[in-house]
Length: 312
View 1: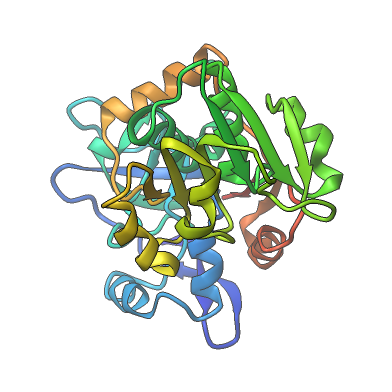
View 2: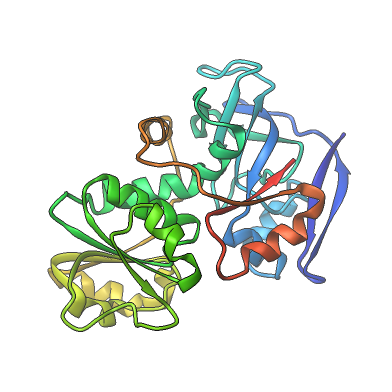
């Protein structure tokens, strides 16, 4: 048996339960989880959201939250061997949840943790770091001559977007709460705007890439601030379906921050960027899994700096 976190979407609370240790299927690795991340989906599941996915997860067991982790391999595969420190990611919509002592994860979604990274750093970098790589190296590769506006720059993804854009030589303007200015500038932002005193978009300013992590804007409102062939990227495409459609016939484009799959090559790229300092773990707080409700509440608090983690 193992200890695992069970959330109750009705009471919006969580508790520890004893459940059987999962058995890995072909292609999977049994992971002893040491640290796991807290993400928006976890908080929304506890609040009663994602009903279709929760129904699917319940067919497997009571663990409904957690999809990124660091830990120790307890079975071997083609690349991974027993005893290795590993980091990884379980698919958002249909993968096993990992807020538990043990989890089974596809080997293709796992990478050995570099010696330079702690378990906490590896877990903090995994999903949000991969998303930053997807946006800034695949969706819209920034060059040193280009400019980027990051709205929500002190949060989990926003922090890594600032770091990676700055490391690529781009001119980065960050938007966050005034209390986080020093933190955001330390991540590499050259310009800063406080939510409390200035709108994110200023008349006359234009950017090659606008990253809107809280999804406060739309393609329609962002387009006048985009250079020709620029891109607006939102965390919630469903809030701006009209904008997505309009961008298909415009030289300016629209995209979204939703990384649904990974691969060994993408994880390797993440490790390379972390190894050379282009990305470094940003950790706001670490809670014991028995204090998961505090971790979820902290995640939902405005003004945090970086990732919220659970120590299993």
